[in-house]
Image (tube, rainbow, N blue to C red; front, side, top):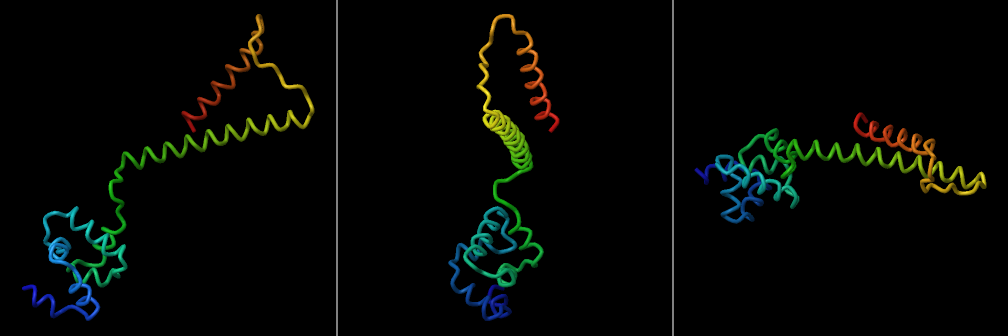
Length: 145
């Protein structure tokens, strides 16, 4: 059966087939029950420069199936994708917050005003209220963000 398959390959596919070792030939076969091993071998061949239409001929799979295998990332599942999106959103919120703080500090520096002493003084409830409001607003922005 392998000889019949070999006879139907294009010259470029025959060249690729001849350069593959026996283990790789077995692993890229579409009838291989170990799909993960097969997919890794296909990705490796593509990374080495084998064209998709040659992979189709050598493996016996259609172009759509090869493209689907090549497009999937190894080890990325839905949870890690969601975690990555959450991290990106949190990082963007923190960057915005940092930018706002730096803008305020720069504005105060340009005014030439003295730096405010932010240590807590006895009986200064007004400062405490302002601090609490800003921190609640920021944490709410992160949660709903």
